[in-house]
Every structure is written in C-alpha cells, then in structure tokens.
Length: 226
Image (cartoon, rainbow, N blue to C red; front, side, top):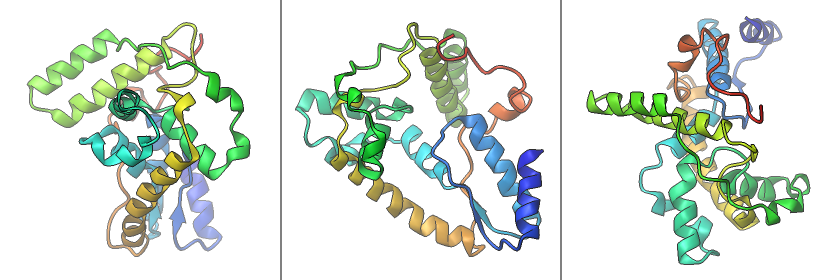
C-alpha cells in the first residue's frame, strides 16, 4: 500500500532509522503506521511509532492518581471527575487541550474556556456486550479494547456532535507540561531501545480492528456529526 511504498522510498533515500510522528489516535491510523514499521523492519531499518505508548498509557491507565499533579488546580470533585474520565478523554478534551496549551498555545481558541463538559456517552450496546463476553472468557485485553471501542462509537453517535471529550474548559498549560514530562520520560528509553535495534516498536492499540474492518474498508462506526 501507500505506507509501504513510502517506507521503501525512505530507505532508497538513505534513511537508517525512522520515527513516525503523529498525535492522531484512530486505531486504524495506528494500524496503518504499524504497516510502515513492519515494512521498514523487513528492510533492516529500525522504526518507531511512539504515539502507541501514549494511547496505551491512557487506555491502560490503571491507577489514575499518578496523574494527580495535572489536576492540582481543580477542586477535589472536579479533579476526581477529570481523572476518572482520563482513559476516555481521547479527543480535544482536558488532556489534548492542555498539551496544546503547553506546546502550541496560539493554536488553541479561547472558546475552549466556555465549552460545557462533553455530554454523557452511552456505549454502543452490541460492542459493550461483546466486551462483557470477552471479560467472562478471560480475554481481558480484548475486553478492554472492545470497551474502549464501545465508548468511541457511542461518542461518534452523539447528536449534536460535540467534537470533543472530557472537559477542555478545565485545561491548563501547567497540566500540559506535566503530561509532556510523563510522555517524554516514557519515550526516552523506548526510543533508544527501538532505534538501536534492541526492541520492537510498541504495538498499536486494538490490533484486531484492521482485519475486522478489512483494512478500514468496512465502517467501524457512525461518522461523527452525520
């Protein structure tokens, strides 16, 4: 495909190590970049898709209290709401808006300060049912992925479609700086190991989605806002 051809061209141009730069968390996007990682590995070139680390950190967050410094400016009830929602704050919410306020503040419209919290999301029932079945069968990783997919599809189905998750109005530059430090600390060792050929690139989330949708040819859910 296009990704593999681009990677072969990079090697022909003399690339010895490749890092795929993205902050787009669509599972199919991650799967496409993973094709590039594989293509380069087959050609003997170490490649890293680092955003997978961020997505796995968020979806497998576990004890959210380790992110407490990011919400130190909030009241206790608000802080608990934001932390509890963090694993599902996947688009233009508190996490991403804070990151943007830190890294590129001129790109953030002040309108974010007036946005209400994202409306309550009802998970896609059929996918949520599959998640429960997977959990009962002991397939905890698949159950987690399906649960995340059920929420994502439920968010896409919101009408009117908000375009964001979580509570972007509560975002701050300081929270973004904290998240950036966490990400960079995680990236440093992984990047060194991968680019020096000591470890494979971290895998994308929901690796089963690409074959399940025939590489994205079948719709994975409703189109946002439609």
